[in-house]
Every structure is written in C-alpha cells, then in structure tokens.
Amino acid sequence: MPRLTEALIRKRAEHNDGVLPDLEEIALHQQELEGIESLEGCCRHIKILLLQNNIIPKMEGLNKLKELEYLNLALNNVSRIEGVEGCESLKKLDMTVNFIDIEDLELSIYNLKANIMLEDMYLVGNPCTDWSGYKMYVIAHLPRLKQLDGKIILPHERIQARQQLPQLTEDLERAVEASFAKKAAAKGQPVSEGAYTRESRVDMYMEMAEQKEEKEKNERRRMGTESKEPREIPGIYNTRGEIRQCNEGKYDFNLDDSSEPGKIIFELWVPKYLETGSLNVDVQPEYVRCVVKEKVTQLKLPDEVSPDKSKVQRSKTTGVLRIEMPLVDPRIRRSSQQPAQPEIQPLQPETDKRPQKKELQGAVSIK
Figure 1 (cartoon, rainbow, N blue to C red):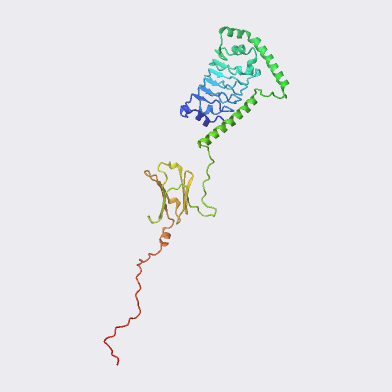
Figure 2 (figure 1 turned 90 degrees about the horizontal axis):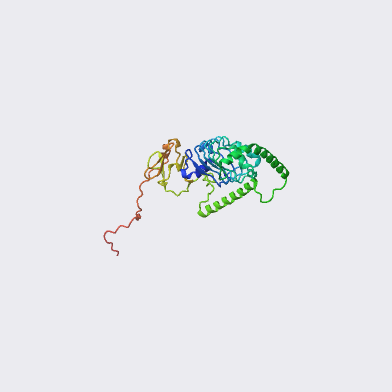
C-alpha cells in the first residue's frame, strides 16, 4: 500500500508546480493510504485537505495545521475523531461513512470543543448515527455548529438540544452499555459474508490497489515505458583478468601518444548537449575509463601515466571530452622508440658479373 510521503504530496501538487511550503490545497483521495504523515513537516499552510476514499484508521499528523479550513476524511476506517484540536481554523469536517460507533461518540465530540470555528460537519453513515438522540446530542455540545449532515441547524433545535442534554446523556450511557453487550455476545461468531467492516474495506482496497497496479503496468508495457532493472555496468577486467577494452556507446575517439612528447591524449566525441554531470571519468596508471549514460568506453594505455597530474577538459563548442595524461617516465617512451630505418631504395635489376670474352684483335688465318 502507498504511504503518504513527501514525494507523493509533491506529485499531487502539480497545480502548484510541486512547491509545498505555500501549498494551500491538495487532493489525496483514492490513493489506498493507510495513514496520515509528512503533512505537518512540509505543508504547514494547507487550507483544504481531501483524504476521502482511503483506508486511514486513525486521525493523526494534523494537529499542527493551523490554517486548515476543510478536512475531508469520508470513506475511511476512522473509529474516533481526534488529533485536530490544534487546527484552529477548521470550519468544515467531513467524516461520512467511517466507523465511529456509539461508544466513541462522546469522546469524539469532546475532542472538537476546541475547534471554535467549526460550522459544518458530516457524520452520516457512521454507526453512532443509528442512535436516535445522536443529532440533538451533537448540537447541544457544539453550539457554534451551523450545519450537520447537510441540514441547517434551526434556532429551536438548539434550544431543545440544551433542554434535553441531561436526558440525552443518560440515554447515551444506556446505548453504550447495550452496544458493548451486543458486541460481547457476537464475539467469536463468524462475520456474515458481505458485511461492511473495517477489515472488509482493507481487503477490498488491497484488491483494488493490486488491480490498479496491474492496469498501470499493462499501460506502461503497451506504451513502452515500463521500468527496467538497472543495467549492470561492465567491470574493469574481463573474465581472463585482463583490462577490458570496449566502446559500448560507439562514440568516436582518438588515442594520441605521439603528438605531444611525454603525454598521452585521449579524446572522446560525446554528444554536444549531454550534461557534464552524466560523465564519469576514471584515469588509472594503465587505463582510462569513461562511463557515459551507463555505457562504458575503456582503453588500455600503451604506457604508464600519472593519474594525479592528468587533466580532464570538455569543449564548450563541440562537447568533446579531452583527457591529457602525462607519462610517469617519459624516458621510457623515448628509449623504446626504434632507431630510424635507412631509406629503402627500389630494387634494381641485377647485372651479369661474369667476365666477358674480349673481341679478338685482328684476324688469324689458319693454314
């Protein structure tokens, strides 16, 4: 079941751009909430609070809301009115269809005596309203109340209520005793199927919450917005224990170890408008690693570098990430260079080096 967290309050305060300190009205109905919390800490100036159609069993977390004028807790699991003595601006209270029984009526009404601004109250649908003297009893104890259960309280009703109060108090005591006796007799007996109880409401709302979650899940799946498990980012070493070399983001890059003596320069062409906070750079003596939106680009370096002296920059115009990594010992790089090779000449055709016969001088006649 969802809890009444600051995050939920902020989400439901979209009409106020999610700003809570000056929030005056919020609707939190039909959220399957099981308690009232967080409001006193972040919404001190709330005037209208709609919490109907949840499964809240206890009125709490409201006493510091000095500016609260209208509180709607209809269709919840509340068994007693309490915790609103400090709500000095409260004018309207809706407790329609809760579980305030006859034995909790006296204390519930007593807890409202400090709310001198209260003018309008709804208790219809609570078990206590089954008592015939309920209306007159409430009117007698809350003389400033102007309307009860949607009906205006007339002047002659106030007079009658005050006159009947002693008798109403005695009748209430007998009604409470009868209620206790009835509940004791029914204790241990199975509840009839379909009975409207606090337990049945909790079961019903839990089922509704599951159906709601399943519906939202199917909708997210249909829209392709279903949340996925966080991707596991590849580690530094592969299964063979070697430094991994990869470019998961398929970004263009350049590793230059010859342009500037004594340095290795690595450039990564990340998206121009990507926030710098989305980049995670790690320079180590043997490798450089960049994580961009959970995609790893990691390269093994040809020589050992000094991480402490490395410099990371990003171009303001192109967004290119540039990392300059000084070598630990630049001499190693110079000595490791191969000696210059002589210029290779094209092959020449071979000449015949055998001695050639000299042309005979003169003619020899043979006789």
